[in-house]
Amino acid sequence: MVEPDQPSTARMIDFWLGGEHHFPVDVAAARDFEQAYGPCEPVFRELRAFLGRAVRAMAARGVDSFLVFGAGVPTMGNVHEAAPDATVLYTDVDPVTIRLGQRLLAGSDRAGYGYGDATDIGTVDRAQLHRFVPGWGRRPVGVVFLGLAAFLDDETLARTLDELYEATAPGSLLAVDFDTEELAGFPAALAMMGPAFRMRPPAAFVPLLGRWTPTGDGIVPIARWRPDGPPAQVPDAFHGGVAVHSPAC
Image: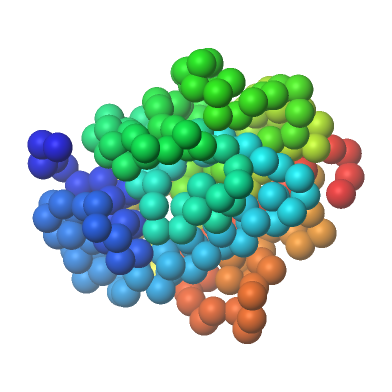
């Protein structure tokens, strides 16, 4: 693979998670962000742990296929590792990340990787969708929507989640997270996130879900969502949870 000249958030996260699928440009960007904010490894390791807990909870409710938006690098405890008996379609919009994901999953018959823009579900390849998320629209599936809400304005986010609700069958589950106002105290780090980045107060999170109904756990700091033990002591940078395609949980 040709080494990219621009950093990728997905590969920066791989670096923070201790993975092997990143480049010097990603490490440099990650170090710059840490200089402005502080250690990111504990935060993103806890975010990945939340992903694992959410996926396992979805699988425990009978979900056996997942569509993942903004998937990043498909390793270090990603969805197909958290639910090894499920089928998974990872999608992203970054061509370098897509090629990397396809290379990593080349030997798998249960997980695939392709282009997909969360704000336009029609961009997902239909053949891949039906192969890796069989029964899409007819039986319950899992949708993973992590790391995306912060880069969508309220109107786009609400529309996108509503379109996903329309496209999925009753009983489907959505794993979602939101960025809090944590970075407001770190102006240099906030500037690095770019003008599209949106922080939100916790009171704004649930209304943006529209018809998706959070489980009884609510949308809470990720470390407090069904922790396996005492909640990890990390900055309150992300809230998250699982929501259901149904009138009630």
